[in-house]
Every structure is written in C-alpha cells, then in structure tokens.
Length: 551
Figure 1 (spheres, one colour):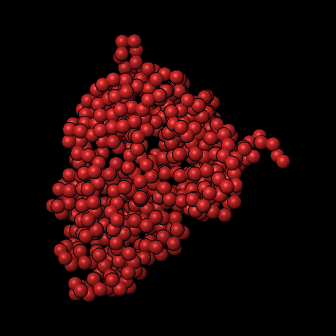
Figure 2 (tube, one colour):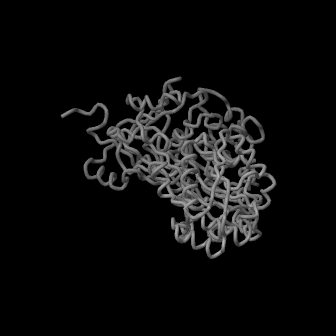
Figure 3 (cartoon, helix red, strand yellow):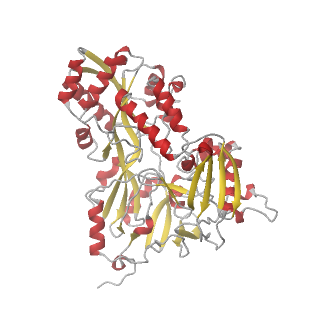
C-alpha cells in the first residue's frame, strides 16, 4: 500500500494538468517588460513536444504528453485554479444541495463543438455514462486509472445518477456526501453526437475504438486540423471559442519524438517548449535563448516519525517533533541542495492552496527555540536513525544537512540510508525505522485520510502509525462536507491538529518548469496540472514570428 501513495521523488514524477504557480527569474517583471517592449500580436506558430502517438483516442492513449496537448482541445465542466480551488469552465453556475449529494449545474451558453454543433446537457451525460461503462472493463479501467489528473475511477463510481433537466441544466447525484464532487467533475467532456445513433443508443465500441483515425473534436481554444502519422498533430486557434480572450498564437503543432529526444529538439529549434524538473534546470539557466517558467510541483518532501517508537509518544514526543521542526534550516537546504528550485512548505497541502491556514509556516528555523523546547521538557540524550534512499543524491544531501542541524540542538542521528527503494519501503511497512525522509505526490483532490486516519495504519498508507481520534473524526467530516465552506472549515481544524501534533515535519515542494523559446512572450503561468494553462495569453510579437520581414 505504501507504494501506492508514497513516491520517492526523483524516481516517479507524473506529468499533470492543474494548477500551482510560482516563477523563476521574476515572472511579473518579465510580463511587464514583454508588454512594454513588445506589442501583442495575433498569428505565429508554436511547436510542442509529444511522444510518438500510437492511438489518437484520448480515453485510450497511455501517452502522458498527449494528455497535456489535448488540454488545448478539450474542456471540462470545471478546472483547478492556481490556488487549487475550482473554477467554472463549461459550467456557468452550480449549486450543491442535499447535504452535498447533489449538484445542479447550469451550462454555459453559446458553446459550440469544433464541428459547429451546440454543446448541451446531453454531452455531459454521455461522457459520464461512457466513463462509467469503461470502468467496468479492466483494460479501460487500468488505462484511465493512471491519469488521476483527469479521471479517478473510484470517484466516478460514486456518481449515482445523471439527469438532464433541459439543454442547459443537468443534475448529478452522488451516493454519498462528498466534498470533492467538483474535483471529480474536472474531466474533459466529449461530444455525444459523434457516438450516439438515431435511436439515442450510445455507441460504446466506437467511442472506445483504438484507432489512429480518431479525430479529436472538443470545445477548447484550439481545434484539430490534421494528423501526419508518426510526425505531428496540427492545431489552429478556435475562432468560435466561447471565451472572450481569443488565443493570440494561430497555429500549434505537436511534434512527435521519443522522450529522450525532447531536449535536443529544443536546442535545434524543432520545438519551442519543454517541461523539465528541478534536476535539469541548470542545463538551461545560462541559455539566453530560452526563458524558464518555474512552478511548484505536487511532490512534497517531509520527515515522517514512527509513532510505534515510545520516544515519539505523549507530551515528550510532541516536544521532540516540535524541536526538530524548528531545528531544520529549510531555506539553506533549498539553496545549497536544490539551487533555489524548491518551494518551502510545512503541511501536506498543495502550494498556495486555498485551504491553507494563515499560520501554516509557524515552525521557522530557530535553533534557540528548538533548544528551549527540549530544555523545558527536560529531554536529553536523544538518539535516532534517519532513513532515506541514497540512490537520490538530492535526498541524501538533504538528509546529511538535517543530521547536522539536529546535532546542533543535541540530537544524535545515525544514518540509515537504503540503496534500494524496495528495501526502504519494506522496512517502512514493517515499522523498522525511527524517522524517514521521503516524498509524497499529492493529489489535487484533497483527502488526507490515507496518511493520518488510524484505520489506514493496518493497510500501510498511514505508515507512521499515527492515531488521533479527533483527527479521525475531522478527516471523515472534511471528506463528506456538505459544501465548499464546510470543507474549508474542517480542513482548517485538520491543520490545527497537524501543526500541534506534527506527525510530519514538512520541508518543501520540488519545482518543475517550462523551458520556452525566447520569442514566446506574455503572462505565462504553467501549472502542475496544466502545463499550458492560460495559453490564450501567450503571444509571439509580429517581428519574431516565423516568416516576418527582417528590417
């Protein structure tokens, strides 16, 4: 079970679709500079990388880069904002009723599919019915389950019924009160008229057909033009897009490459954009022909404590954890190990989340305070083992610095570094550790029960064996909150306990980035679950567009 939730960063990283923004090199100042120096212009072309496509059907493709590319074509009812709350897309308005079990959705007017047909409630019902049908087959379920950025089968299965009120109003009922109901509905909507016959029967086999001839028709900012087999997918801006902010860039092509060819293609100018992790930033920082748009990923590094260890129990255990939290110089780790390419964070809630408490970073680096806490509790002669995976050089260097920090406040720490990820996980599952330095890939759909609810101690996802009855109660209440306000209130209480008990001492989120050709300008804000977020605001100045006349 630990393998399902804990992903040692640097080994597993998911390319995703939705939303946290933080930038390197002063994005705001560069935006102002762009707007002062360059006049916004329509036109131009941009090439994006995608791995070679074997299947054009977005529901069946296992090509992660294609999902980001298809985000330009398809839209959902809702999507995540940069604060990880939801915003309306194809939904114009909604109302949550029946203690959180029912959502009444009013759809946006004047939305058309790329083939000119009207978008209606029938399309929403068709998409949900199609997904529910697909999940009944293991083959489709396994494919879709890999991409929780779009679709989480276990959540879709809690949709009890979908009822069309009229062309622009639809009611969705869940089988329970569910605070992540809007998050569940962030998947792309597909056009029903392409897959329903004259008798209103859904042509499931056609919709789930594995074919290179599949032509994606969505409602988004860009529409499909052509597919050059094995070479590229061509798109053009959608002049009939419902959004007032029409895209500036006219043509976008997805250039098909092997994953290990992406960087070379950027260097040669064959592609204009490349997603990368903090581990590759240095390759580009001295390149004046590119711009780095940095953002916090969903990958959270932290210290987890083994609550089966008597030293971490009771008041003394809490004092030890609080002292450790103050003793670690996270800023220095981010500077010296990650070259500033990480974002400090104390809690396992996404960076800049609308749910975060104002006092989320209350444990700042303070050696005097750490020593004071231990002295007040009369705690001496502490000795622990710190476990991490040494095959990740960043993780190992971080652990080394933490050990020095803890030695500074009188805590002796023995290294317990594992060469093999599997052996580390095996030890954690057996409870054979004191403190573990590791990482979690956090979901956009918030649910911390896997980490902190006592029911999950036995299955291993609560690998630290943390148990708090009040926390158990709050986690259930937060998950089943009847509306968004109650959800936020409950997560405030959850954070209050986390900050008091400190079952995890949070360190940081590692950063990812889009590396972009210098000629692409504008208010560019890539996000973990939306690489091409706000692409309609990107532009290429007329003088920098290919084919522009030289002065």
